Amino acid sequence: MHVHIETTDDVGRKRVMQLLHYSLNGHREAIESLQLNVATIRNPLGTKLHRCRLRATLRQGPPIEVEDVQSHLDLAVTRALERCVRTIQRRRGACMQRHSA
Image 1 (tube, rainbow, N blue to C red):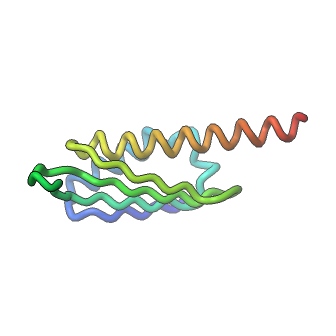
Image 2 (cartoon, rainbow, N blue to C red):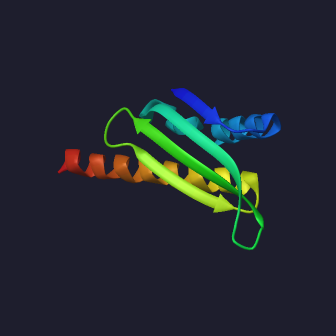
Image 3 (spheres, helix red, strand yellow):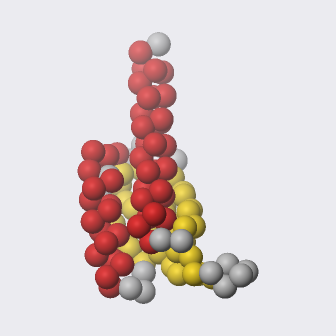
């Protein structure tokens, strides 16, 4: 699996890598490449938020694109990764049902 992370914070990059290894550990064989973009943004009230955009190119099937915005970096990345994993699991389940029918 090829991983590309875009962020302006080196500490954030290390934390994102840890979260990636933990979250995607059982699904690495399904993912060909993963691009993750983390940015700090401000909402209309000026509150600092973290946006995580994820694009996973799978070995089979269409790519997965997820975006999540949260007040904490870990939460934004974790939620995006969890949504990606759930999508992979759903697609695997659907594929298994088609093959067994």
